[in-house]
Amino acid sequence: MAKDYDRMEDSNRSSNLNIHEVSDLRRRTLIRGGLAAAATGLLAPLAGCATGGAASRSGPLLGFKSVPVSTADAVTVPEGYTAQVLAPWGEAVGLSGEDPAFKFDGSNTAAEQETQLGMHHDGIHFFRHPLTPDSSNAGLLVMNHEYADDGLLHADGMATWTAAKVRKSQAAHGVSVIEVENRGGRWEIVKPSPWARRITASTPMTFGGPAAGHALLQTRADARGMRPLGTLNNCGSGITPWGTYLTCEENFIFYFKGPEQPNAHETRWGLRAGDRIGYRWHEHDERFDASRHPNEPNRFGWVVEIDPNNPSSTPVKRTALGRAAHEGATVALTKSGRAVVYSGEDARFEYIYKFVSRDAVKPGGATANATLLDHGTLYVARFDADGRGRWLPLVHGSGPLTAANGFADQGEVLIKTRQASDLLGATKMDRPEWIDIDKAGWVYCTLTNNSNRGGANQPGVDPANPRANNSMGHIIRWKEDGDFDGLGFAWNHFVLAGDPKLERVDAKGNVKGDAFACPDGLWTDARGVLWIQTDMSTSAMGRGDLQNMGYNAMLAADPTTGEIRRFLTGPAGCEVTGATATPDGRTMFVNIQHPGESPSERSDPAAPRRVSNWPDQRPDGRPRSATVVIRKADGGVIGT
Image (cartoon, rainbow, N blue to C red; front, side):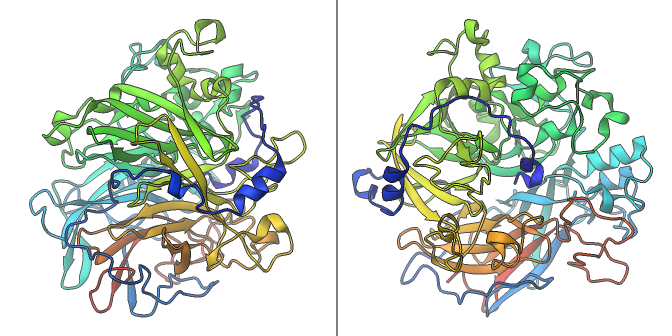
């Protein structure tokens, strides 16, 4: 999720050609699925949850009655389902048996926040329990905490600003690992737990891959360029076949105060003079002042690998996967056992990537595959007008990626992934977000929106991004030639989101079922249901093209028929993001992010309940992001 930071100026000023004519793309957009017969079958993807025990398809894939559009300050699920709040911001993760409780007046200290779940839950995954791997009643939940609302985090917001508040804000970012258990039909966090962990914006990490130790990663505090501190703006996520979690650093640039005259590299990555968003970390943590520490921003924007089964392990920023405003990292396996990692970059006119590992995955889990993601080839996607596409290698010395064009070595190509993709002529996309893979081998990517498409002095429409002022977003999909490491692919649009009640053609869409807008989160369950989560901006929700959409929601899609049904609606001001399930498919975990978000995206500490009071609904409460447990009342498989 890019939040409304993307309302600011775009950083992609490259002159990649949009060479395809509107008449051709309009014709192609209407021919859904026409390329499927031409593409070959591939291996089934790694599912978001294990397939063992989950129901196989026998009849309609979607067996629930859809819920209506909602503007209630509540989570609504279909008839016959229940929703339980499990892990709200501020709940103790279980580091000890005496972790401090959440204080509704915002007075928790930075040290206390370091032991509690962070703010603004996002990507999430359920890992089998290390001691009982065959159980669907216990496991580890690993989740991202994307950003902090300082108006809610502190008792007086930002009225005063101190080093302690900066530390607390940094502690509200990152990743949480919690142990969870189903106790008599109700899920609970196990406290204390030997696996409980908080990873924050100041946790020591290391670099792996070709850019590790690069001169552009070296700082005064880390002369070797090997020991970055922290991860932040953790948005989408992924899992690996060897049992680790991939967390993705998205809008990292907005935490930095820029120099008075940013250079071309800084400008391409969106760094501007001054403090653009107002986190104000640089006032008490000078590494976030890029005028004093110009290489510090280069140390963010990576996919970070975490081993949830080893709480003493050091997270690793995998530079071979490229630096970007990463939204997610979805892993597939080739027939030869090599790992392929797909990722999108959630910003206007940025790109879709895939990484193919050099080596095959080895038996032996995380230890045996500790460096597998450090060796391989990164590619960026080009979508052509004829329904074909090409993966362009981001390899030093290939084509224009030479020292003469500003790339001294492979490390510099990876640190400057955007500039390299510009030169290769990759397709500028409408904010590529989450990526997932269905059982037939189609790879799906949500393109959440792009109101700048076709605007003055902005790129026009093209076949992959066919609508001007794309307020509704769409989902594109492709199938690789032969295997996931193929260099060519066939593509089409799975759906153009929209509202058939609207007059504007580019906002109507072609949804077969329940209307929706701004697709973001994406997850395929063990049965093959494609779950779609929406992220309409609070500043636009209920207005203009979004006037009939209600609050953000989660929908279920049948990839074969294209039918889409609304499954869940969220509370006021929230985004619905992140989904995972137990191995038996009978419990789903969904994250509700930033309930109560105001259009300014920073709450008024004097009126924290102005927009929402979910989930606690206390007279003295304040809205809290939380993980919600979804179950069927009859104990059946979710979605049937």
